[in-house]
Image (tube, rainbow, N blue to C red; front, side, top):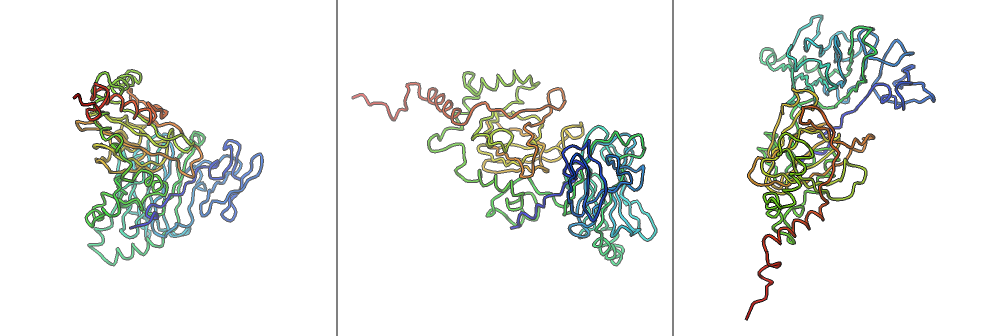
Length: 488
């Protein structure tokens, strides 16, 4: 099977405070760029090496702003990790009259290039070669344009092997492509031409990003931007369902609808082995009726589950009482996850979660009983994002995953006639220095809210309560028939 290199972590670059590694962006200025090192001055001088990534500005005495007002201002990646391929993204909040241009070329001096131009009225992919400019793809639909309402990621993928260009918004996934061009048609007409294109693609190693604003008066209105580079092109998306190595088939590999844990980020691999074992199950030898007992507690108006769900629906003021579920925590919060590291979640029949994000943490989720449907979303902030772009059903024993970049926003839904139980396992990434402790979600009014991961019960307390409740209902004479004394 593939190694974890199949999932190559992107490199991130923010504007000066993050790029330069300084503490307070408001007091830092870019002084100069020398030999791929950025030298900055603040209360104490710091230097930070950022490899083959550079910022250029002709006004070093002012905080850096990426703009088209002065053509000398731009981001530049000098050497792609692998020539001719990769995905470049710029994450920022657009403003009115803004636009960006991501240009790919073999060298700084080369006049031939491929570019993605995105504005608030049009998005297009251009090719300038041999003194001719061709519009390869163009779109004016709102979902392909810069959105002044929110901070989001716009990415451009170069695929030298398949000769495909892709532009997408949101997570770097093929399914979220909004504009693309495939040179396959030209290949059918002129094989030598496409071979020349592939040769040119293989020489592309420079990325230049310009834009954001086109008027001087808008420069200071910019919110910080984040540049992302992924060494691989966006091609086939990693599916959310994990299968065991021994369950992999030729058909599964061809269709790409499942993956094995080896293909996923190291953090997901670590979490996976914590819960993948067959003994991590709901019904156990000491309580083989655990699932049935929980179901009974949900349906009985005297049950602890019934009462807790009723209480949560009232306190949360949800429009639909079925937008509730139970959270039973396992383990102590060690400070490296949003709340407890393990959460047993109980989903009554027909119940579902709000659309929510996962604090940029990594997670794996195992279905312990019955089945559940996951709906995936590109984000939370706009009405368009609240339309799910992908869904998948997970049955008992199956496991799904979440990374800090992929499948972060979802909604879980139990569409069966019985309750479902899932086990969630969370952890922040090693490079996460923020440790955001909330799950952002869409509230009843459609606005974004924060949820602190709280516990309805600890696992030992919950199991004991359910066991006692089940015993009292099933054995009203206080003990099972097998233990009663036989009258002679």
